[in-house]
Amino acid sequence: MGMLSEFKTFIARGSVVDLAVGVVIGAAFGKIVTALVDGIVMPIVALVTGGASVADWKYVVTPAQLDAAGQQVAAEVAFRYGLVLQTLIDFTLIAFVIFLFLKAYNRLRATEPAAAPPEDVLLLREIRDALKRPV
Image 1 (cartoon, rainbow, N blue to C red):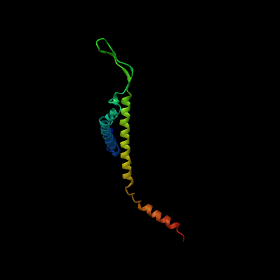
Image 2: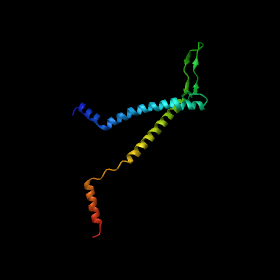
Image 3: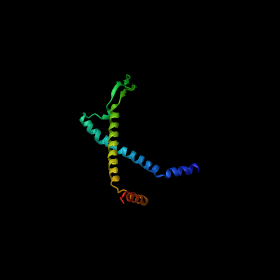
Image 4: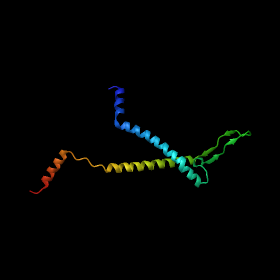
């Protein structure tokens, strides 16, 4: 079997296609949640904290150095913990929504009727039950 035919077989599997669809939908969903956090959640946090954007929160270790003309000679060194906090909020919201989605999905799957056992299993159960009965 050539490499091209093996690749066709690999791609034709349902699980690979499902995974690809899941990755694309997950990336789009991540953008939606990021827009929600940037557009709604963080402005509310900024109102509570006095108007400062969370992404701008930082601890400056060394301030930027400027020359006499006001040009920056050396960039500031800072820990930008606000970006980390905003990313953690994004992650938490995405994880929570995925949790809710999977919880609803599992509930729907659980309500599906169980498949009837095969005929040979039913016959074996009848034989077992007949052997258990007293004579």
